Image 1 (cartoon, rainbow, N blue to C red):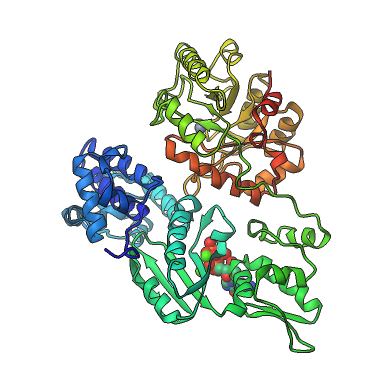
Image 2 (spheres, rainbow, N blue to C red; image 1 turned 90 degrees about the horizontal axis):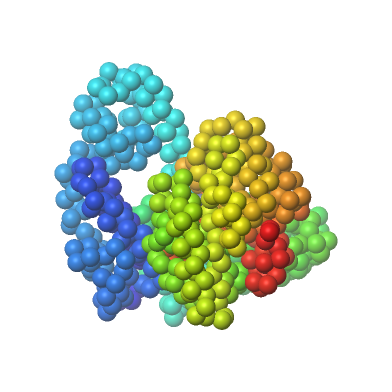
Length: 576
Ligand code: DGT
Ligand code: CA
Ligand code: CA
Ligand code: ZN
């Protein structure tokens, strides 16, 4: 098979996820989890799944047994899976989409489809509004209101995707295009270049001596389901995962201007254009032109545009019209934390609680990323769903970590916990146990519906525990699905600065919590940050990149983040 026609890891994972969903709807037990586990492993696999399928050992991938391996091979070879097609045919039409709504399980979805002929979310909305659902067995008037509410949530969710899942796909396409001999420059643009936490569509920019050929390759990439627009300057496609990708091919002499323009944000561009107008210049995707002379002032490279306007180079992550142009003009842009500045991961789970790998495996993977240390922060006892550790088990873990540490002198495993902040603000480990740990992360995992006063009081109480170093995922949000809980962040940040408690930027793709905006706010009041991947398996350690992106979008420097420091300095910043 030609190298350009490859199914990506994300596409294979998407097929397996759908199989899992459909099996679950059918009421099959255990298998859905197996498919999901395999999908998750493939999604985060560093190697190309197509290579592994052809030359490697698929069974070495966690969660992939004989039967799933065979299916992966079929997907890689044909781009399809017959098993999935037959599963789709077995179920009443629409059921699959309906179960994606919060609160609609398989039974309800099947009833809606069979008894009311509801196939789409629009059908469902109309039926709920007309009060036709409450009479179905198992449904009530209240269910209708809940259905309408979850439709609302899913509408906003459907349009955007997580950066963490889209960036690998986008980079893969970028690489394939860059590999074409007739392609000159290629770059991601739009929100994905700005590393926004969610992405509407992927924008890519290229230069080429043969635009038709590039567009042909692009429009026929594996995983392309539909071509929306087909031209020599712009082609838009939709991948089978529903992601839209826009490719624009521009002239070499306009590349910088086009990159600037299509990187956005729109608000940043408008502000930048105003600066041009003030000089009687015009800025467009073709270049910066002096209107008096008609001369092109800049356009070939992006930095030249900023330079010509008297501005320092402005990192894409900052281009949101949040004061960056003023800072660029006055030379006060922050010295953003670099993507290679992190020396260790301060939030890692292992098999001891809900993770997939051992302490040693996590440490080995962290060392391979160039880290100097990691903190093992498994859950404590009250988090039953995550198989939290009892004080006794935690003591065993601490001893195990000491044993492993004795075997190496250039990498340190810190013992820690992600303990749970209870409803009254107390954490679920006694002080005597916390005192033996290097790193204590405390997080809220329940009672999200408390009032703002209660929640704020709860978190402040936890922060006043002298052993607590870090507040984990401080707002509890889950991108595209769960709003942050109500909490007075101003009070929390003030206390954090005063007490020396760090705020986490949790780098897990669905969290990115604190957000960019909140991180920037916290920094202004003197808060220090800890970046943690919240890795549940080896491969997740790479999520750190998205935490760094969030920090950069929050105007943070390496200085603001404790795990950019060598271990000896980090230790001084940890409490007690
Ligand atoms: P997204 O796709 O919703 O995550 O966000 P973006 O920022 O990627 O937006 P998109 O894909 O609509 O457009 C890409 C860039 O193109 C955008 O960041 C700025 C530029 N652009 C698009 N439309 C306009 C416009 O009407 N005016 C200006 N000034 N710039 C635009
Ligand atoms: Ca976009
Ligand atoms: Ca676009
Ligand atoms: Zn947590």
